[in-house]
Length: 268
Ligand SMILES: NC(=O)c1ccc[n+]([C@@H]2O[C@H](COP(=O)([O-])OP(=O)(O)OC[C@H]3O[C@@H](n4cnc5c(N)ncnc54)[C@H](O)[C@@H]3O)[C@@H](O)[C@H]2O)c1
Image (cartoon, rainbow, N blue to C red; front, top):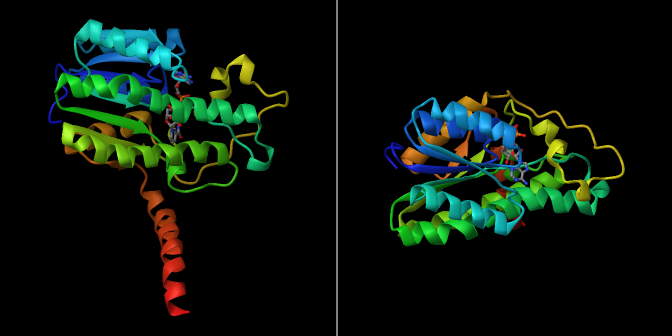
């Protein structure tokens, strides 16, 4: 996708952090922006800022864990703008703690938002994007936690590994339709992710207090920096958006360990 001017972009989790930054970067480039988030006040603030760039916006309160709500979001987007060219399945939450202590509610909540939210985006938008016959792009926000399994983040890792696998396959499946796919895999970004519990629904809250967040290695990037990398990747049609140079060594070590499994058997 060479230009975002007059395109229509949908961003879930667009009220805060990386989603907010992607929405504003797209608006700066002239895209009309549809925001979807649980936090209406935050979303309205972002919509106001986006309009400051002279583009039309739409903000739709959406819980991405509910397919019907994501379908209603798609309906509103097509009704308002007649097309969707860029879909950012970005809403996400994190829960910390060892897998031996994870509650069923942790699994339901984190997989509900991080994995089912992406699946719902694909179900609700992709068939209509294909039917529209225009070029398009899907950005799924995973994490470096979808490529490297950090201790103390198991439920989150599981959701993000799934998003990476889904995105890699989606890229192949949608290529014949002229729809590109990128999967965003950042390490630390300065957002409110550590305050994720704020959006956990009452029915999925744990009785015990939440585990403290684990410290991530590497730098914390500004959301605007990450958003710039995403737009570049969409322009260039690149699948992986691996934002941190610090990711190179852990990725190499992981690959070497896998390679070793084959090579050591050959030697035996
Ligand atoms: N910040 C990081 O260090 C980091 C690193 C790697 C990946 N990520 C991923 O980036 C994405 C964005 O997170 P962020 O860091 O900007 O955090 P954030 O908390 O600042 O923003 C997340 C947004 O998602 C919204 N949200 C939560 N549950 C939702 C639901 N059920 N339906 C709709 N919206 C919902 C929240 O209201 C919030 O506006 C997530 O997928 C996260 O896993 C973040």
